[in-house]
Image 1: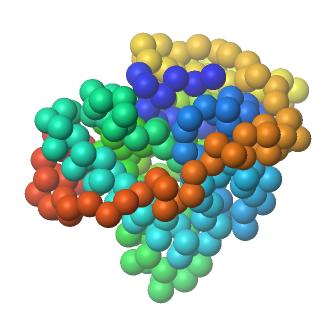
Image 2: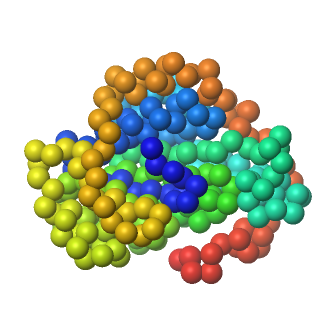
Length: 270
């Protein structure tokens, strides 16, 4: 099980049949019984995450839905920010337990689909989506909103938004990949030996990955094998723990643009 407390945001890459989806299955199975809100983005028509929909508070499967859901998530971050401000604490974990909101884990399947444009008319929509996702990554940690971003490809050809987002995802899991750039985007800022090791993962060892976690060191590790059926069963078993979006979000005093910017890390990309 990944620990989102020391490492709040993760990037999970890998080619088809590499074990990337198996790790998602294991994550959902592990989190299903926990007091967390699960939210999904799946622009492949929902085929990857729909089987777990009973445990998902929200699932966006179209680009327009993604924009609306990201706005809702930012509204929730602002609510939590206001709550922390009112109680003079810096994060939700310092709030009284009776007031502390439950963590939100945001699952993004095939992140490239959020950045690809079918035509030029989608340029503004893609840019807005990229900005909101980046802002969520920059602000989410203190307020219990965590990202688990998956993709077969996260190359720089997808635009600067992907590069900026990647810089916020300090946890890295690189399974076997089809192109060197994806391995480089996933592990390139780590020990060069990690990059070499990722390219040596054979096709007959699905689930094997190079992992970078809390201490910044890299490890070669196997994923726990969890089938889609097992994950779906867990989602159904704990469906009663799934809050509605109305239960997650409430109306609060607005947080100003300046207050948001004041909380951004100084080194965060614009």
